[in-house]
Image (cartoon, rainbow, N blue to C red):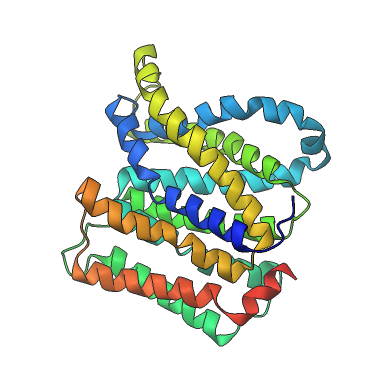
Length: 301
């Protein structure tokens, strides 16, 4: 279905992006159920994958025709979301969200060197603002912020992976959102399990699968939020972005930051210092400047 105006895709994108601002909340409930650490990340990927597996079988002919491209998109976006979830689990909500929102800058850099796109001065300013903001947020130079941790680094690489993934998706318009969504969960599950094995190896622990009652307790929040809301939301985001300019889409996606900024202190009791808010303002300004640049329209030409 091709919309007659941009209103419906805009409302859809804004609404689902708001949901992403609460991505952290069910993850906390999953951990409280006993599925902790990297196992929580495996759970929030593998259960949606089980639900989506009939779609993969149904659309296998399409997968086979575009196998390597679909796998490449799935690896980049699946790794990006797995690392983003890692950041939310091991860092603060706002820090992980803001660091991940360097994605437009990473996408611009990849577009310049991979697709030879022209970057005007506004986009270079946006990249500089974003990197300065991230540097302040992660430096802990004022001793009021949390020190740099594993979750922060995961959020950085999540933005890089997702940014590269968006560049590939924008150049692969013939790939249906169904394949984009399902492949993300295939590789999200694989990368989460690989991450689990790496953490176990680094900490000297042996592989111990959580008990059945833990999985039973953790399944309801995973199913209700990540399957019933996030999976359709992800499909909706992939669909809506095909009918919106990158500039409008990027600005609408920033509703995620707004929801995270409101929910983190109200629900989780997490607050940013004044220096952190200054760094956050630089990152948000960079994102707005980047996605509103006149040359962004060239990315889908």
